[in-house]
Amino acid sequence: MPPIKHRDWYDTPLYYDIIFDDGTQQEADFLEAAFSKHGDGKGRRLLEPACGSGRLALEMARRGWQVSGFDGNANMIAFAKQRIHTAGYKARLWEDWMQSFKLPKGDKSGFDMAHCLVSTFKYLPTEKHAAECLQRMAAALRPGGLFFLGLHLTDYDREVPEHERWVACRGPVKVVCNTRTWPADHRTRREELRTRLQITDRGRQHLQETRWQFRTYDAAQLKRLLRKAPELELIECYDFTYDLNEPRVLDDRYADVLLVLANRPKS
Image 1: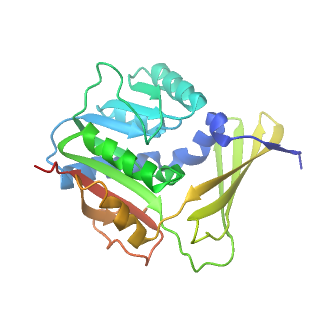
Image 2: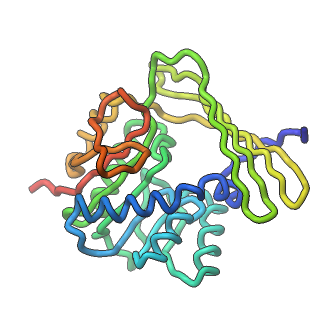
Image 3: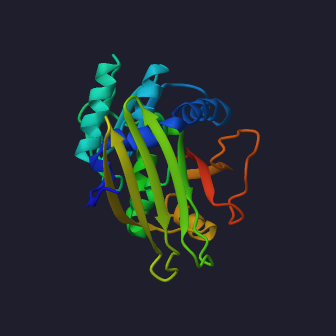
């Protein structure tokens, strides 16, 4: 086993992208179908906060969406820009943070749809930051525009760590991802995570580890947060199966929630 290098996995966007790319088509299919079902079906302007390696930005551009997006990691943005350019598509991407983002000059608000699907929202460390993110998303959407927000709810009664493992390949590169999540601290609303990527790239192996914290939510905490952005109305809830025929109630009976929030400006 090679020695472990402590490195932020967002600084190695190719390996990150390989692990998560398998769900891209299903996520894009869901977004388009849910936009048609829950919205008015008008417009093709899309905003993606925390766009990462650009896998969904590229896929939605392929489908005819006018894509804008940002991420806090410069390596991710550079990778996303290059892949979209190489594929022959366009997207407006920039480096920014979810709680304080500003649209670039000339890129006006009034987006038809926005999405942040895979728990990135939980990186926001405080209630203030989370509320500011939601408020900025509401301001970026047109009236009736939809924001799809996905995140994992926390079971505060869990007493043992959880482990997930994925394996994915792309050409000569194989990535094995092992993620461990420790029980959350209900008082501080923090949970510790560790991800190890075992990478085989053209026959050479290395192992890199990332440790970070998530802010935690149960259903009641999430509902309280949503009340701090009253312009965003919760109109439906799903889980990470992305099945439009199986809406869910926002409660603690399942871990993965996907909220459909509609911008309803208050008069």
